[in-house]
Length: 622
Image 1: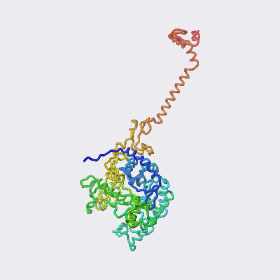
Image 2: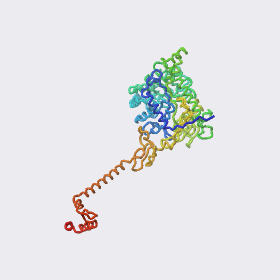
Image 3: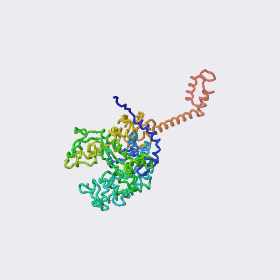
Image 4: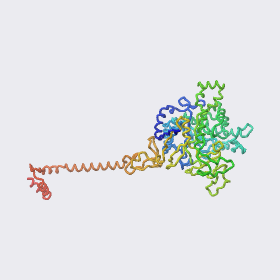
C-alpha cells in the first residue's frame, strides 16, 4: 500500500495563507462578553481552542530577566517564528504568563491580532514573598497595578481576557497562609492525611475544624480577587478571571465562597487528570449552579508530557538515578502524548458551552429537553468555554523548581539519598537551563505515573544562537491540527533550520555580516525583517540589507562634489578674466596663414613677451 503523499510546506507560505483567513474574520474586532456559560464575540458563541505559550529559549529562565516576558519588541523573532504555526494548527487563542507591567507590549498584541488569534494575559503575582498581601494597603497596591495594566491596553482587539494571577490557591505561593496569619483563621496548611486541612479527599463536614478555617482563608482570597476584578472593570470591558490549581478541592471552595467574587466573568482551573477529565465537568456544573456562580469554565492548562520515565514504574524505588539517554528504558514518547492530549481535547469539546444545544432558544436545546425531561444534562454538558493545551515548547529551565528534589543534588559533594524527596531524580533541582533534564514529580494520572516538567512541548527546541532556537514539531501538533481543522495529518511543514533562522534575508547584499543578538539589533517594528537577526553593515554602507550608502559616505561624496564644483568655478572665472580674453584675441592664429601669424611664430612671440615685458609686447604688435 502506497504511503500517504507528504506535501512539504514552507513556513513563509503558511504565514501568507493565513492573512486572508485573519482579515475575513470580523469577529476579531469585538470585545468578548459573557452570557450565562457562553463566551460571545459579536453575539456568537466563541469556543477557545488554545495553546499555552511561554517561549523561553534554551539556556534562559523565567527566574531571570526578562522573567518570561518575551512579548516586547526585541523578541519579535520568537513570536514571528511561532504564532503562524499555532494558527495553522487550528488554535484561535494563546495564553501567556510573563508580563512586565513597565514594558510596552503593543507590537506583540498587534501581531497576535494580525495572526487571527486572541490572547489570555496572565498578570503575574508570583508568591507572597515577592508580592506581599498582608494588610489592606499591600493588597490595594497589587490591585492598582493590575487595574493600570488593564487600562493601558483597554479594549485591544487581540485580548480575550485578563487573569489575575496563576494558580492563586496553591499553598506553594503562600497567599492562603498570609490570609490565615492576618485574620487568625486557624487553618492548617498540611495535607489531610497529616492532620491538616489541605488536599482533602472529600469536603469537611460542619463539625470538622477545617470547615470554618478553610472558608475563612478562601473568603479573604475571593474578596481580594473581587477587589481586583471590580477595579479592572472600571478601566475596561475586557473579561476578568483568576486561574486556580486543581487542588484543595477547589470546586468545593468555588461552591462555598465563589459568590464573594461576582465581578469575575469566568472560572478557570488547570487540570492534569490523565487520559480523561472524569466527572470533573459535572462537579463543576454543580459548584457553579447558583445565580452568582453561573459562569463558563476555562481549562487554562491541560495535557501530558512527551517523556516515558521509568522513575514512575516502581513506587518503592526512590530516588531515581536514571538520566536522559541511558539504558534504563526511559525514552521520548511522542505517540502517547499525542493520543492522550487529543482525547482530552475531544472530551473538552463534548462539554463546550458553544454547542447549539446549549442555547436555550435553539431547536437543539428544545429537542434535548424533550428527550431528557429536564435541563440537568444540558447544564452538566454546557460548562466549558474552551481550554489551553500545555504547552507550545519544552522549557529547559523548569528543572530548577520542581516538587521532587534532592538537597544537595547528585553533583554536589554532600549528596546523600536521605536528603531526596520521594521519587526525586537525583540530579534535580537542575539550574542548568542548557540541559534537557528529567526533573519533575510523581503523578499517578500521567501515562508513566511521572510528570517530567521540561517535556510538555508541542515542539522540541534546539539552540541555534542566543535566544534563538529551531523547533521540531511533535506528533501532538498534527493530532490536534487534524482535530481542530480536519487537516491532513500526513501533511508536513518544513521547519526552518538553525542556518535559516540565523541568516539575514538577502545576505546583507555582501556588504555586511548577519548579527543574531537582539540586544545589538534592537527592537523590531511591524516591518517583517526588523529586529533580530539583522545586518551589521561594512563601513560606508547602511539599510536593512546594507544596500544603501551610509550618511557619512553620502556626506563625503557630497562634499567632494561640492569641492569639485568650486574648483571648476574658480578655473572658469580665471579663464574668463578680461585681460586674458584680450590677449587671446590679439594673438589669435590662423594655422593656414590667413589673417594672422603661424603657430610657431605665435609661440615665439609669446616667449618674447614673457621675457621682454610690456614694452616689447607693444612693439611687436605694431
